[in-house]
Amino acid sequence: MKNTENRLGVTLSGIPLDNPVIPASGTFGFGREFAELYDLDILGSISFKGTTLEPRYGNPLPRIAECPDGMLNAVGLQNPGLDAVCREELPHLRQIFHKPLIANISGFSLEEYRTCAERMDQEEQVGIIEVNISCPNVHAGGMSFGTDPAAAAEVTRTVRQVTKKPIYIKLTPNVTDITSIARACEEAGADGLSMINTLLGMRLDLKKRQPLLANVTGGYSGPGVFPVAVRCVYQCYESVNIPIIGMGGISSPEDVIEMMMAGASAVQVGAANLTNPFACPEIIRDLPAAMDRLGIRRLEEIIGAAHTGRQNAQ
Image (cartoon, rainbow, N blue to C red; front, top):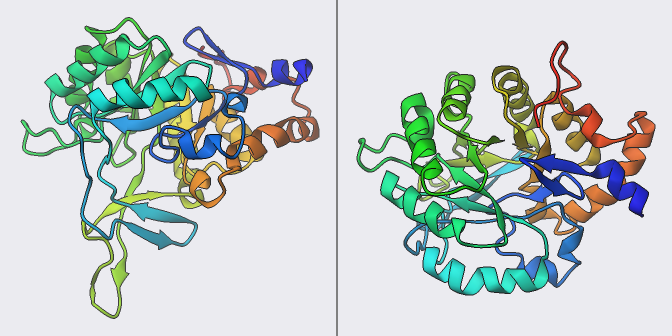
């Protein structure tokens, strides 16, 4: 067992992980339901449910729609709010998971990002702060922070000022050039990147002749987005010198290996958790056999293996 853990071990900004598999924010809640099914300590880390300053009910129903090879969601960052997360959810999570956590935060203004980051900085178990910049900037006409390099950099600098913990900026793929956003975040002080967030999509109800989602559009996730995610990770690995957590449609050990060869130092598993609650432990269990078939001794050795002339960014 010890030898297997060494083979799977990776490092994110100086934080060692037993393996690179992390449930993605929004698909794992705060771990309560999954802890009833298996020992959460098998996971590399957990990115817990996206947290905003104020409690949010989320968008009106319906806010989930099925798609070929995935799903659309327009949940709308439903969460109990910063105070309740720190007061109630994180103490409970400490009882069922005993490794560093990834705190996913969101905001609709720079001040909200600042407040959430400052509070998470005080949480001892939080190892990394993951900053979701796909939110609309209420002071800039509703444009997403993550679609403009200057706005993305501004959020990064704001969070950087109030925490010494590593900050990973979660990038949206709904841009013309994701590498320009990645570089802006790196220059502003980001320690790493998480990518990709969901792709914007929609479905129609053919009988009602109207959108299926009350929000009209939603985020597309699942196996169908995997090639897009691999492309984004590959491009950004070429453009920045900070580690990347890759996500988007990962559902198998082979997906993990492919994403890491593209440049990811670790991965997050999202939609797969919703269709198979054992997705993460099964991937971890089956990784050594997949590595053996491909002649891989240790996972850390394949980070960025699809690139030439560049050493791994750790």
